[in-house]
Length: 71
Image (tube, rainbow, N blue to C red; front, side, top):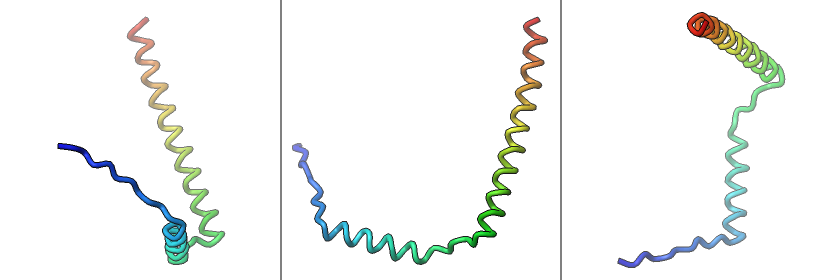
């Protein structure tokens, strides 16, 4: 069985069509307001801090347990 080699032809008209469709899709996006963006950014920042604190606490506990086992 012989594998056939296929090449994809990319013409400028295909690129134009692609970017036209991307632009059309971006117009359909429901963009957040500035206030929503600030609020959501704050929520993400707080969530990251909480998760980082939890990971730090769990790591500290396991480090102490390991220190007791090794000692």
